[in-house]
Length: 201
Image 1 (cartoon, rainbow, N blue to C red):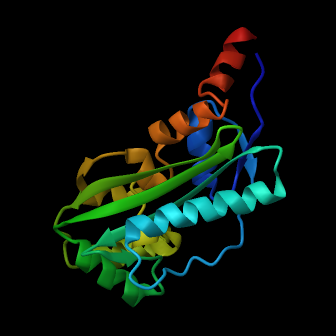
Image 2 (image 1 turned 60 degrees about the horizontal axis):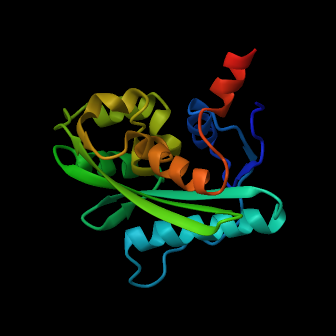
Image 3 (image 1 turned 45 degrees about the vertical axis):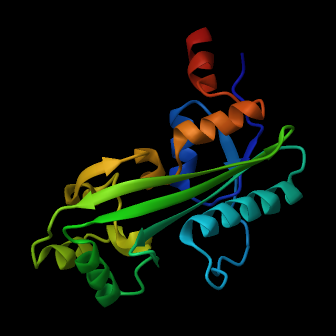
């Protein structure tokens, strides 16, 4: 058995590639250039579903011989999307908004291949504890929040804020693995390939 390299990931995110590798799916790929502006009155869940498909279609246009995966993730509170912090003040305001309450991480996944266009969406509920007044500024100084949607990394230092998570942990990191693996299997790419290859040596 050989490790598959047929998967093309329409994303520049190293976290998504690492997540796929963790379940034995090797991927090549790069980011795609699409307009990610929400449409008027577009709900966050509809947005991530649309953008995941647009990314996958853009990737597939350049690599029609490959199975292509596109994904998009947003952090949502009060039905408002929280993007990457613009600056320190924006980040602190975001942390104050998340403090002591629940928010949603919404992810769309689209896989294009022999089985056609397959999609799924995942919503994970995340509970933050109440933050001490000096914690947001201290967290900002670590450098971790500056390129993260919603301003935190659940797989990193931001884990200390999360008291409860209902749904897909890997989706909060960057890609819902159970759902993605199911879509990929329908396209002929199965999990555990790298592990099986190692075991055969």
